Image 1: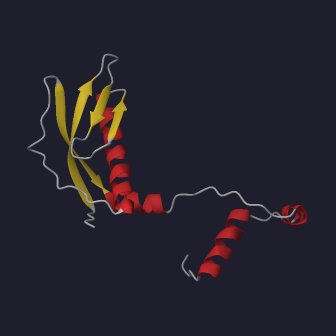
Image 2: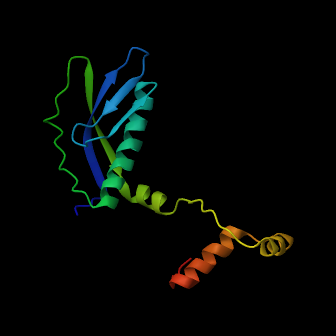
Image 3: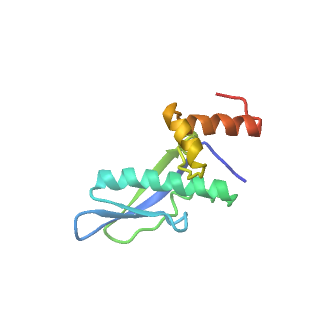
Length: 136
């Protein structure tokens, strides 16, 4: 799997009738977004591209080489290079909170609530111990 810390791809921006912009990445199949203004569209393009590439990395998909000069646009469209830095994005994705539902007996819940137990903290500690993960 080719994995880089930085990617740059051409985004094609099309101005819509409502004044916003749609964004597509011809080299990244299925990567689309939109924004209410040019600045918003460029911000959304960066977010969409980061998420799309992260998904490709996680799935083990081949990430295509960028071809900035070969991207074609129709009249009225803008071709803009978009660069993303994956290291901070990966860290954010890997450390994001994930909500889990659990079931425990009512008596145990009552006892824990009386002691003001932080369920998330206890579960994280227990999972780390159970899995043998010893880092902060």
